Image 1 (tube, rainbow, N blue to C red):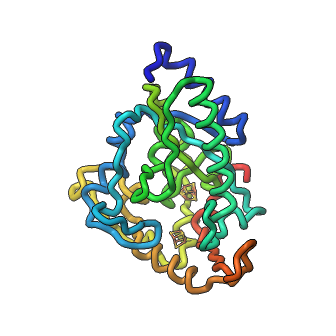
Image 2 (image 1 turned 90 degrees about the vertical axis):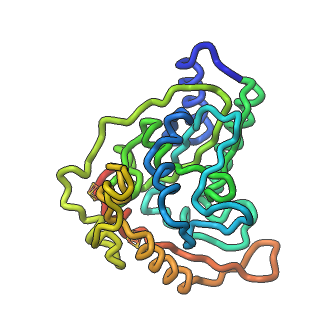
Length: 271
Ligand code: SF4
Ligand code: SF4
């Protein structure tokens, strides 16, 4: 459904997302999102098979497939304070979302979609986390939605919460404008404790170049982020799993606590 007044619905939607529990919310137009750095570079990179990707028959890993009717992306952000590490603890075999933080985001997205469909007559596409299951590159959407910027730790940063924030994206058929990039960049004059904190030296060398990829906005901002090294740490984290009992299930689950060192080292934000 197309909207006549494109600004007013956007404000209403953002207010509703916050009412349902989002700490931050914003809108990115799909046309712009399709040409954002991660969506472009993912097509140019060799196919990558690691933590955070899924193997789906007939589908290239890392390639986004857009619903034809989708026009805007609604970005929902929830703060992840250091005092609540369990929000990110990954428990396998949990069908309703593998982390508590993910379940909060899923609940907000679900209530927002329900409201928008029933009260605003919009079509909503609730997206999963994984690209191969239908997701999009959420950090790019959050930048375009005016919520923050990409940091030198390759994480999404907001003025309010630094990198300690979790994202979810939902698409709609309302053709709304992007808020646009926020005037915020705490990395420029920072001594980069985030990079020093990495146990795998994932920011140690240049992996991607502007000449090779035709992009100035590169992973780690200057092309220095090695997802292979980060993946190595995630594999270590997987191997160090803890066994936990699962409600309603005989078999125990596996709980994994993934590395967040580059996140905790960043001084930006109030949490
Ligand atoms: S520690 Fe500094 S360089 Fe790293 S993400 Fe935070 S502000 Fe940016
Ligand atoms: S998550 Fe851990 S291993 Fe990965 S880049 Fe950050 S500090 Fe390095």
